[in-house]
Length: 453
Image 1: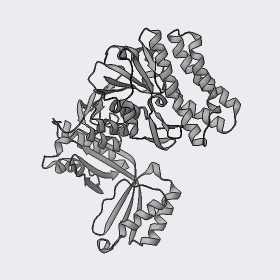
Image 2 (image 1 turned 135 degrees about the vertical axis):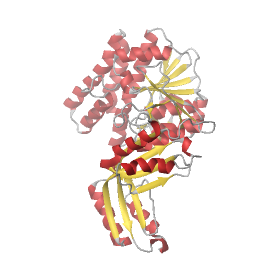
Image 3 (image 1 turned 45 degrees about the horizontal axis):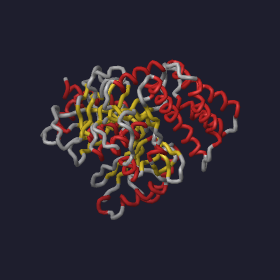
């Protein structure tokens, strides 16, 4: 049995639906289908999730006129798909009623309201997909997170699955003749409220179902032929990756591989379920297979190189830092007071560099943290580096290979690119290189051409 997930661009309109249904029905092993909300039909279109966010904000502002206009726009997206397949008008009424009744829900606060509104992009699309499949003669059953007991904890708009969910899924029974259609992106809290995973969380739902239902494969259909060894916007015609390990994908996702939601790997890793990333528009292509590492035999030294420019760094210098007990702990306590996490903390005898994800910070918070560190730690030098980039060079083939670091650094040096930080993980499959934003793309190209050209 396979779990199949379709992204928003793969379910944006009737024609996309038709293509997805051909993929679903071409393989009898594709029994579980996870839907995203309808995505953009054209470059200047609006995703249904974004429309639902507008709908939620209109309700929060008590702007009934705006809410009505947005609700009609949302419903029209689903109605257009229904019309494409000549669904009887009465079958759409429950979807219309559910959308209209969203403002009347019982929400503890506006964050829960926003989560519930957002989740309905996927919920309505799953219900509609099931209706369409049945209309076309393919027995289908619409199933919700409530029905299978997909329970979550955490905040309303950044939930995490509760482990007991997997036991409930293992006991879920369905007819071998039905195609199960399941909405992605959300689960149910212990108090019975809707909470969503982070944006792009339908990938997470698919992986949760694949693990809990003991699927043989999790197929993730998107809009690219494969995961590539470098960003095609940085390197021209990069080599596609045919097979890679879970941990390679995790390392590359961290720095910027955005094809696949990196958090979605975790349930699949825990369940040892292989993942196949494929193109909805070219389903015959093999795509990229993501597998456990225990039996993986690499064919290349590195699998991919990618750079993320969304980082910043705080550099501290203080003589005899290594002799000062509790120095690092005091810095971490300052960060904890402001609920700020850090990404990495490479250090030397007299130096520490703390690397942050800039999306977690604003200018005011940076000033507050720097001021407190200056007052409480009193470093000899304190510098905030705002234009920090991290380049990840990843490959299972690096583990038992000598001289790889020279092969990586030499082409960078030839381009006169400064490297303020180098770090290699204990797994020995990833080397992290710090550069400045303006040099990041050149560093990726230099490394790529050394290993792949």
